[in-house]
Image 1: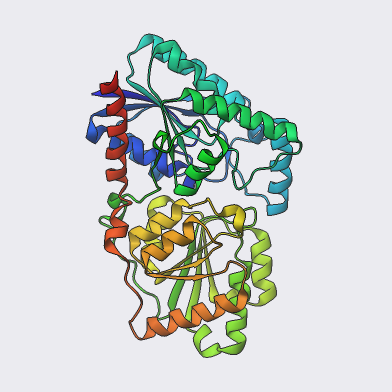
Image 2 (image 1 turned 30 degrees about the vertical axis):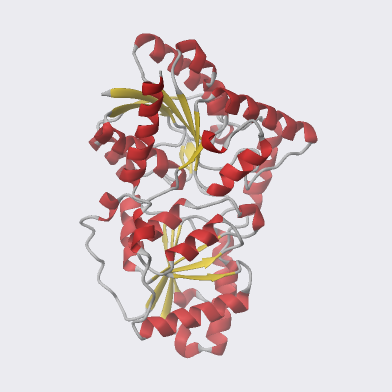
Length: 424
């Protein structure tokens, strides 16, 4: 088998969405003749650990090398930590982005690069694959491409310079980020991005790139995750509307909760037959809003679940929901959207213009509103409920859904690896 060295800070047993993409790539690579060795972090302070994902790694017999370095997030504690309030996260994020360029994982990235250097001296590898963010991991690894004459591929799970959470306290900060990204893009063999908008941003910012220098590999869903899942027994006949994931920055449930309160006041006959489910971290600030709106009897909160249990819950649901708050998120396609596609359930998307809205339109089994229009969201819920009770909810475009099979996406990725071997 060919061998690929994978650099991925976010990897099991860490949970949440940033882990899924690289996990599934490495899981399926061996089916197409590529054996991965993964360099990742050790035990750090993080919001979720998921042993079920680690079991996937072990079952796939993936070699994992763990290393630790100074991490500002882990100064006080390692292991599972409570997710702070949105405003504390924003403040911490701004301090971190002011002090560390390109990110606060730069110490870990330097250590990972040293381990990669040692491995490349001791063993033969045919390619290096780096998953970002953190973008420091790419910047620290690029020198190995020429040193060892080995193809280097980078995977942008999010944008770098035009990231939705970008914060440049001074023009110098932005300049340094752009200079670093410029160096990376001039060095690597191939750039892989998660959607069309990220590709367009790169082409606009870096004129030396050509259209063919960048490949789009969307997020996806793993059909194996949906196999042998026994449907949970329905406790009642109510329509279940579910949000899976965390709320952070301006991603918030407040507009849907306020729309539902409006529904209670205007159409209690409908509201009494709907239950809102939240799977994932639900912050204290959101609980306070639920209490203030007196919605406790309409809401079921599950907290963080393993990936397997999360899949069970979204399959159990009748309607799935996601939101992105504003145009800063125009280039974001959340990983959960594609797992929603895998369920083939109808989706309520409260979204700005952008790639996620376009994807939902192509999915077809969708209801789309502006992210903060309470009246529009309320009317969408009424429409959905009417279709639900008459068994007329829309069905998805099956051909569109088939594009997001993680196994097929991994096969395409390994063909790119293979092309560069043949090119040599």
